[in-house]
Image (cartoon, rainbow, N blue to C red; front, side):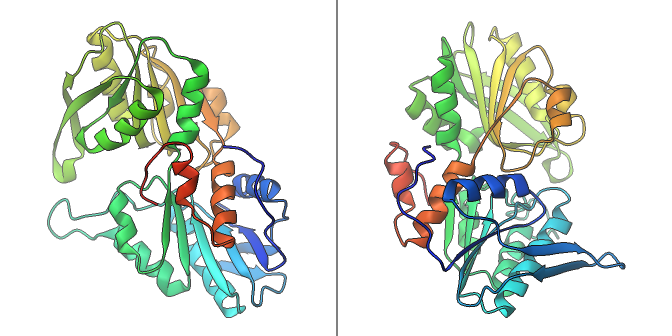
Length: 332
């Protein structure tokens, strides 16, 4: 993704950052050639969130960068309150740019008497006053249908595959960690021209919380696997899978994910010798201390993609063309 953009944003454009990932917002602003909007966000003495917009935004086109990563509830509430403040300050249009859409895994009822929290979050964003949402690699694409406002669904596949093209991995194989990720894996195979293997995993326990790797479909012996997924949280499933691949005669694996949630024992698990490198993006900030704890983590910037999408939305141009130009058909 190039950082040279076609056109300028104009005077009625404002870019704001929440507290979840200000570094990403600054990078997007630098690419677009704009300063971040003036806003004060902090806690009241009773721990409630206070938001104060410190400049006039009347009649402007607003873009706020805020992934709803940990602490998810705090960052989500901050986003909702900020959107409400912008609406009441007479912004013309408010676009919530949510690089990581929290609660995305709760997209259905896995067992009885459960909420569908992804739909609830979509309703909350709309009620708060968002006119449009931009997200990157939703856990499932049908979450777009939970919104009654325009939703642009971007993908980091091009960002990640460009890295692997530059690495020129010998004898590679794309590995889908389960049947639900086959379509994602096929995008990698098309762009990298590598064969595909599928791992079969079996879930058990309440809500499918216990995962067991049951088998591998495809030839991985003597090959270098690239396991693809949307996010890594604790790394438990990936850990099992790289061990299974190693037992099947595969070389140490690369892991390619969009969202580095990385909680619990993830960093320790991802340091296993069966893992060559974990390639991810900065949709969620990865603090330097985490990167020092595990030097196998490689963080790529998603800012050029988001800057291009924001500019195209603002100029009423096609967002899909970003991916069509790179020979990637993706629902946006």
